[in-house]
Length: 612
Image 1 (tube, rainbow, N blue to C red):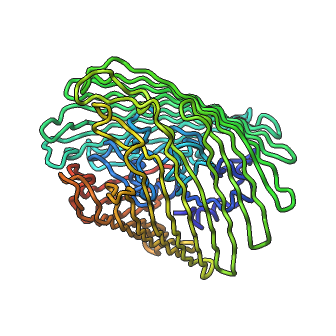
Image 2 (image 1 turned 90 degrees about the vertical axis):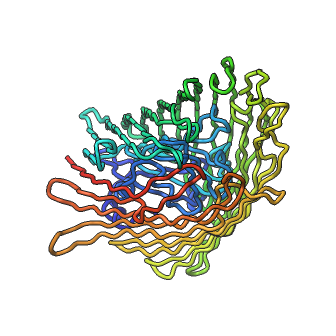
Image 3 (image 1 turned 90 degrees about the horizontal axis):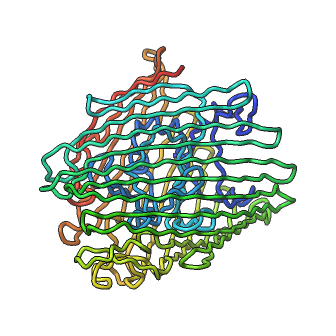
């Protein structure tokens, strides 16, 4: 799902620093890279055009069909959703907004709930597979996902749905002011109501999502650019404690303010970003309410030096402060618990062109955390071209510091359901070796294989008998992941076909299997633009994914059945706008993932997009 040739051809004259016209292509640079070291970073880009063609409503619709990623959603749209990248745990994927971490530290293990993220105001999604601690800092053991909210210069209004209970409305408007400011407004409202989240439940569950995104940027002078983003989203979904107790809801609110300065000089590019985000989550468990609030402030500064001969390098610092409070009145009837941590990171990288065919990239970062102290991460990559072969060798490390909830989430009560805090928890640390081989038959056809092996030490895992209650400790078992990712891609100006297969193993070192991680997945993605003499231009987007058997509680740990899901989208340009039909789960497969939670059957979605 890389940027298509057609999209690149349409935007070939656009520049990210185009100050007179519209810089209509998003170029997002990977943190802690320089000119030569960034060239070898593995990065999947899903752009706005591809998101619209797929008919996606939320982030889950997009990430479900990326190889090396397994998604588990506790029911219909809007429900709690976990993501497992390359077999690592759901809290081992760092989530970022424009390159700044946004994982909520008051969640149980600092994981990100992807079920709350709807797609309409997101301009681009970037996926980094494999340990990325040297680039992004703590929590990127399995990889990172970056949501980009850049300005969209195509003004449009869109409406889609299939009945009064399932619909979505979104709008985008950008104006270039006479004083040089570029102002952008994006808004969305989505309503979804389907079957019960519980597989054997009787009621209908609903999810409502609202998003607002305001972007502004301006070249203050010939060498200084300022940009700001205000992002807010609110999702409210029915919450089912069990099939016999289907009352309650989960209400998740998030607010972000982000401002950046980009200073250009003859020899360097300097970046400064100030970021603040707030989470406010509320759960109704059969009339008992739980509240979780967190605030995060980040200051990040980075400098990239322009290449000198065959060497490029860069360096920077990042300070992050997290504070949170949680009141659990449902299970524990606990008083409010508060806590805070901070982390200071410093990083540097260099890229060296050993020859025209060989490059060496080095990345390093140190993170000094309030409770775990100073912990380093690094990444080393050697890439060589042998004619049409490209071979890359990478060794990288990652770490995850304990979340606020793991450190401080203790209610001090004696009931059997209490969570016992672990303020002395150690950080999880990983080490990964990776071999990537790519063969390009010609400009249109390529084949790529990636082999990886990862070890995670001091894994913070759940212990139901920890100190007479329950908590997360480093005393359970280390984790090991092995895998092979294969991908064949054919593309030309009008179409792209991708066939992929992932074979993986994710276990604790004592041999027990990790849950909800299949041993094998494979799939097909096909995108084609057709210009028919009778009906004119239209586009077809098709994807299929086989999700192999995996271990789950059903109700004891055992292998559960595989699934085969197909989606089809057709869009047609007319003189008044773009008309689309999207069909998800084309064969209407009935399945549970995880066990006990039903997933959507076949759904039809009609859409209309008007550009103005």
